[in-house]
Length: 217
Image: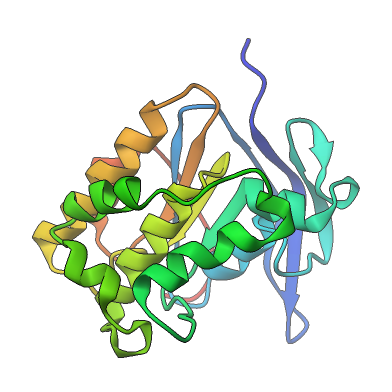
């Protein structure tokens, strides 16, 4: 039996003295895409952030490769389990500056930025060299999402936590992103994806299994 890549056991999160979710378990297998669903206020973003080591838990434990999240040096863990928010933050400078920036971090020492690889990924979502030269601060919400996806795939994690990653994109470009993520997932047998989306038809395309959170509709 294949060992799960990412596991969560007995997770709980309190907000204003109310449990958003409690005794929540999940096991993410290599090669799998898991959809997280639930109404507004059910805590989908908080769950993804907790899985990514960015938000505290009030109960339970997350583990990567059988090793507790707390036992990992957090920069190393976050490099392996990457959370992409719906509204990514951009840095000063060009799009290419934003792509290069992560390669200067200690956790990615030994990795080298590849402009040709960046252009290949961008070309698959309908962007060319001019996009690399654009000012990051001037990007639309959808363009910032494309930048975030490409940046993540240039420094591939083990697990991608995608929080409404195409919410600001048109349907055609959203499908391009879906294909890009699917190809990344198929590139090796030790990767997995967790995905949230307000588009039910998108979740049906990208995942075979869902975890529904309770909460107000």
